[in-house]
Image (tube, rainbow, N blue to C red; front, side, top):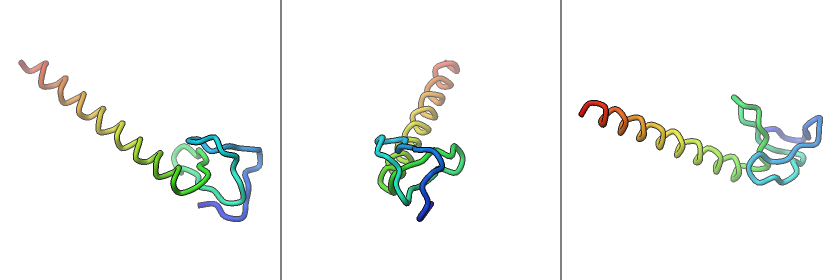
Length: 67
């Protein structure tokens, strides 16, 4: 979490588009900004679902190819 500092250039939340204020979260790997913990948590939940869906699709593809 970044406190008491706004980004050098005007930024908006990656998820909701709200303008970034005096405190915000930045995703470590991508450095994308999020306006608050809720938006960051929603991003993380979406990322986990995407990984799970990808894993399920890969598993289904392997099962079909073995038949």
